[in-house]
Amino acid sequence: QGEDSGFDSHRPLKIMNSNKWESILRYQKKDHWCGPASIQMVLASADKKISQENIAKDVILDWWGTTQDAIYAYLSRYF
Image 1: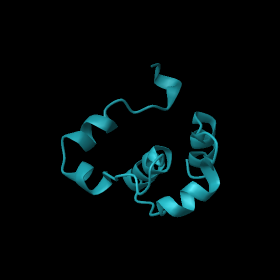
Image 2: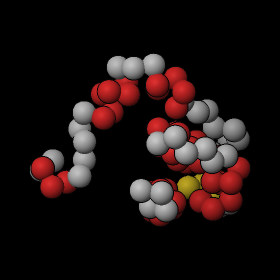
Image 3: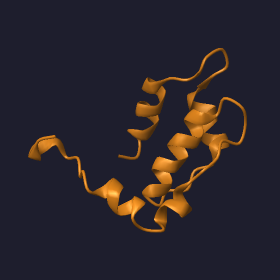
Image 4: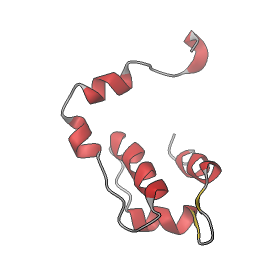
């Protein structure tokens, strides 16, 4: 990653080396909700509280689950 990438490579390590990860960890509420749970964890790391139910309404396709594009699009609302 270059300097202009905007990626702070030390941020994930700072979270893992603190107890903050315990407040970020989320389990999926329903089968096939790994996408909403993952999104919820990313948002929790930024102190944003959105329920998996609300996330799922926007990202889950009944016949597929959650696509990477849907995750990216949802998170782009906040970052």
